[in-house]
Image 1 (tube, rainbow, N blue to C red):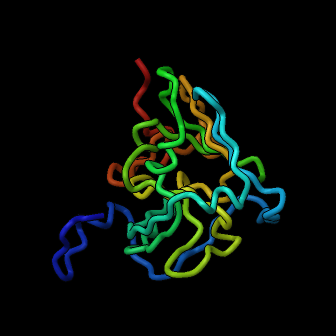
Image 2: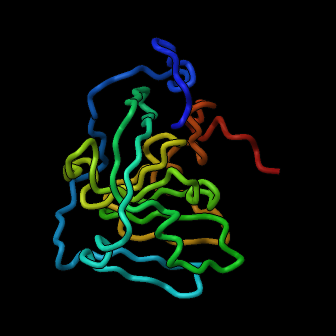
Length: 201
């Protein structure tokens, strides 16, 4: 995002091992959750001074932004120039007071799905909690009513159906991370699988 790209030169936008597509493939583990705006909520908890809870109506009153970002799936496809709309994490964080111990994030989603991020990645300027994509509401199978978008990492970190953000002092691996996928997931380094991780000292 923000890089100058010469016509026909996509080398600085398409990570190694990826191919381009204009489609938006659906990759989901388990059934698509049902959304009820009357019972849906969004929580912030863990290493925070005060836990927060938003109803669906309250969440949709938060400041809204748009951004354009590329999207890279670990299954080797990339889709460029996605237009997202939602709440930037940096704007949400204006309401959150972290404890000094907070170093990691665990994203909780419907159907028991989780994914983890170092705090520094979660707080990047281009990380968003989105409900629209390319001018239309996300479809349920793409994460409506709320999807995390983390453009700098492989797309399984861009979790669908987000319901809560938990701030942690220590890293806790998420659903795919405990099933053999890389803990960091940098597409430019092709960090696809856990066996590629360097041993902890």
